[in-house]
Length: 360
Image 1: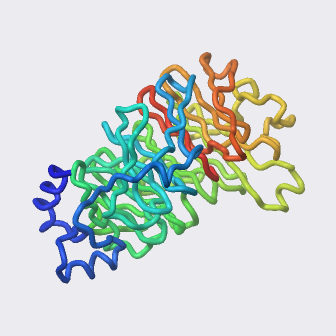
Image 2: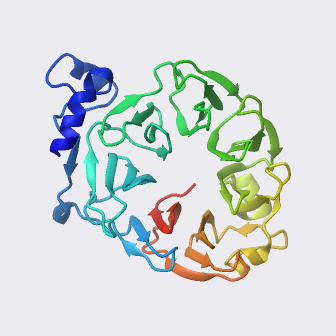
């Protein structure tokens, strides 16, 4: 704590989001949701606030799992998990929590520099980006707990996620579309303005984005976008698995459900996002969940699919399944508990975290 406090004092004069004691700066901090405290991190008292079943961890590629929820406030809603070096971050409805990724049972601590709902955490070369839906986004300086607002010149605060390109350019997904900054947030331009974007994924020199109009693709750093997959439902989860782009299309539209009786479709691209096709029925764990079109039935929702070394992990409403043979066969490894769907998966090496929540 002394080292963190010292680092905090050294960097505070240069960051508007810093806490500098009972000075007028506190009113500025309050305006951006940063409470007036002297220490950036406080250990959570585990016994009275302990909850279970909201976050699980696997250290062996998803084969076995341990509930690591102890020490988090009761009825905690976790939106995202992010692993950076020895730290694991939790974005929650009550702010940012962190623990050590190097220990099997993290001791969760609350970061008091951000007192807002953290809806998403994404990677940044200068520290992770913290999206607070409706409030913009921030970047944390590693090892300090200090967060700097990145949205001052961005009028749209409905931020879903942030992607930093290899050249340092920033892409931001929002309810309106996609924004780009070439100068680390000093200036922004709207490069796509045709609806909600949830995910931004980079593989090689190809970008894909998933949202309300399906899947978009860009090959010029996000300057221009083309629609490459539009089945008139939401691309609610878009990612990269085994070097291929994968998207989960889903809807709760009663008119679509009435005619098709489905909530999800899984699509994969083998050619860098140019064309998309149905993932083969044999590559998914619940065979009985599909009709003749290989679509997921309403009774079996799919939430996430990730690669962990040589394994695949797939999150269904019934639990998490693992494949050791590229999807030919699957085994259940973590069942759903107390109707808490393990909707979101995050991977770092062979360490995997699974979050209970509403999913994509």
